[in-house]
Amino acid sequence: MNKRLNTVLFILGATLFNILVTVLSFLLLLIIYAQFALKLLPEGTQMWSFPLIFIAAMVIAFIVYRYALRFLMKKIEMEKYFDPLFIIRQRKDKR
Image 1 (spheres, rainbow, N blue to C red):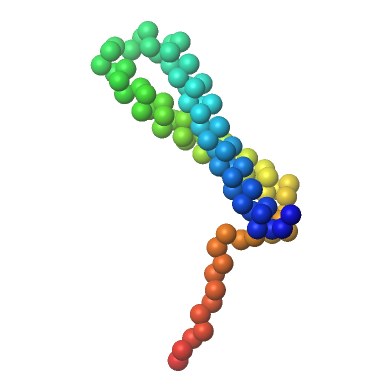
Image 2: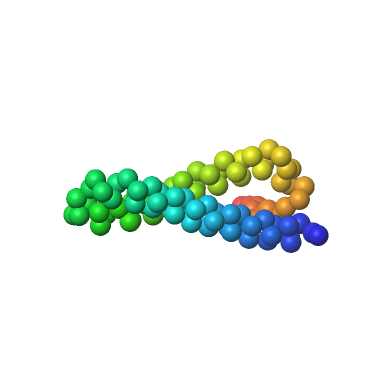
């Protein structure tokens, strides 16, 4: 496999990992909310719980994704196996 294919597969795998962590954390937070907070909170505040749980799940997934990526970058030499996503080309000065 070449570097370009490795890069594409890595991006697809990382995206699937991020979606999976988001869904799992959302379900976990929803279960915790249903078990504990649903009985304690008044009905007026319960409608705000779903968006807050969704945002919290996204934040948790972002944090888990960052730690997983840092761990992977320590274990794998990225430049050896992956192409850079953005190539910065230097301009020639016209003076």
